[in-house]
Image (cartoon, rainbow over the protein chains, first blue to last red):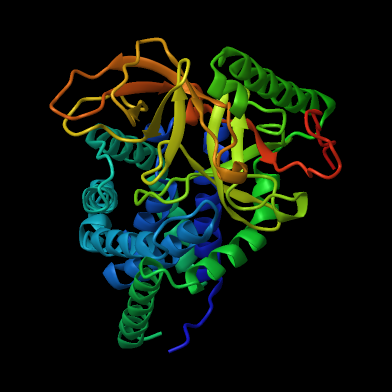
Length: 168
Length: 275
């Protein structure tokens, strides 16, 4: 039951932790408004999920979501973001085969993951009687996809190279 | 790890996460303890990653923000020229120490929650339910405190409501979100009056203050009335309020610490020297 800790696993966890810190801490300091902030955490989760498939994607998404939930100011209720990111990781993992063929497949996986997260957020807002900002959700999705278009090739390359060196 | 073991691990962790969500929703103290542990662990990292400047210039900026906040507070108190205003603006009201702080993180989750984290905490004397102000007016209140950081709920939070005084003495409350089906420009708050008086566009909205100054001390500017809603059959009037502080551009804020009444320090601008 206990997962074997591999160097690759540690690297991925570290990257997710850094992304969560960066999204919450560094980006606002550059004056980036919330709606234009790319979701770097979902980008990392999706990049790994499209290489490894839904089960691993969901696991990494769950871990990443827990980090986001726990790094202050954090999410409320605790664990909801984790569940959302797990679903996003699983969704991106479904594009496993397509991603092997082309970058477009990986981008579709990222799009699926982002849409799952934003739709989940809208559902939570509706259920929690909050204000729903569909325009902001759409803008964030597009910004995340744009950043993914630039970053995904590098992320996929690093992930595949590490796997090839049997670090996993 | 085999595929089966991985699936099993995933299922176990998912169940654990669902349990955590249910525990938090049911008000158990366990998730809060997990939060404060995480905040204590990540706090120092966050403070250093945020690159909070400890130079002379940054200190002057903090002092400036604190002094401007005090000035705004004093002006708001002067503006209340009615008897009730004078009574409430007694020397003890709103005369706490202002402890400057920097925003080190803002919420990014799509599920909402706490909104802003600042770089002072338990070690600096911050407690839950203290007022947080910026140079231009009210920011929100402290909701939880960790050793190195505190979380702040802003005025546009789902369950934030502030008792306020409008103009010369009309009482009401300000909360986030639209009143019924009215359209509001993003970021605007809704003012609801408690009696059948009227307000005008341009009226200044200040805090009424809570018992013991928690969570809100009196006389802090909340914003100005930008439009008065047409009556829609309700008993009392509602209006849109543009907050004095733009929550997306928060940097230097100050936590209003309760002043010790015995030492008679009320009224002195205590600017904490950054350690």
